[in-house]
Image 1 (cartoon, rainbow, N blue to C red):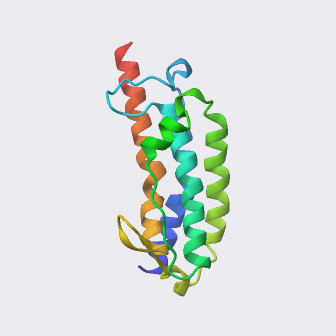
Image 2 (tube, rainbow, N blue to C red):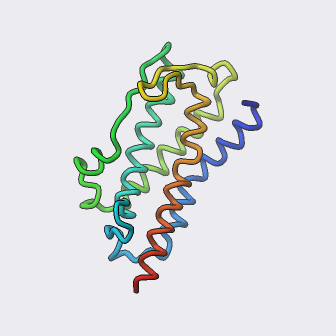
Image 3 (cartoon, helix red, strand yellow):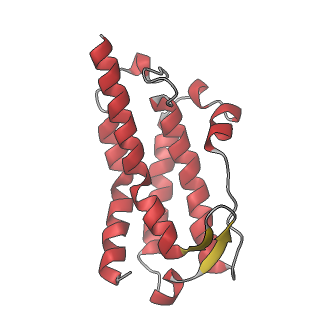
Length: 160
């Protein structure tokens, strides 16, 4: 991956919280925990997932940079959603966490050397997992979930 490609992905990553905030604009607040699409998370569950995932991602990139060939631990988002009662909690702190953790990690990403981008760990489900792989995964993560939030909003508005 070229430095220009990394820079573009870092910019995309940095913009993720704003994309999520935009997707939530106009979302009926009394419907944030609704499941208008069977089998899909609510907007609240998505917000909490993003905060927890971002926190885990921040540890992952730091581990990749600071440790030699670290193990990158998996987790189950669905287990987190249930065990951590995503739908019973306010989304404001989750959105603040997403924003703050991304801001700090973006600063770190912009300082990495070419050699640091190539550092690898091992993920039990994905095998070799480099800092560049991390960036390709997380650059689009919030954007994908923002799309889910928009689809939920459309389903709710269409149902009214």
